[in-house]
Image 1: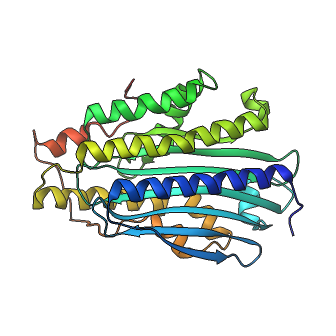
Image 2 (image 1 turned 90 degrees about the vertical axis):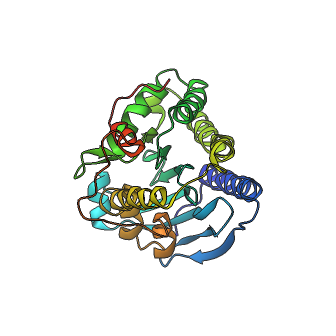
Length: 302
């Protein structure tokens, strides 16, 4: 069993509370859908709480998952992390929501903590937005609130983590970003932040607590927007891009699969319906083309 640590238990408990508050708030915002919880144990150590919501007024499918797992790292992960020790502990909250209305965006959040020993431990995470239709006022609102959360800790966090998100959430084989970015960070520790582990935990929790007010506002802005069958077809196409990224590039998906994680919890990020129409392209001058023109790195939203 992984060595007991007061700090890692504190992190896990705080992440559980964030999962609870987000699930409660999303049920209120949706007005119909309710989360169904599955408790699971990981062979090798630890487990989690998978919570899935489906067929709501707003959310067609979504998950708000908590896990705290430990054990021995596979050789492939040890090599990727460039570490010698193979005992690990990892805890986090991971969220993906796929809305029914094409004008409500897909959203993803992950906050996580990884520990091998007192010297080898760090925080990671981020939030990013994937609109089916890019609405600039919504994207500016999203980025503004992420910047506020970052600025409470260090002024350089937002521009640095925004650039990392642009690079990370990029579908190389499509030469486009998955959405309109957000923030992404990894391996935060005192050596590279000038903050204590306690302060980095506070930052991680601030990111987690920003999720609900941001997304409920975006829901309220767009939940009643009328849409056509054509809008739904476009939504299915954009969902297929989301699925491609998660299956080909996402490091969380890879880590979960390589450490014998629970498959249903790992793949809950995939949309309920997506389409891969052959050589699909947006019509010139259309709302769809306007959206595709925003799918690039380096756009300054704030």
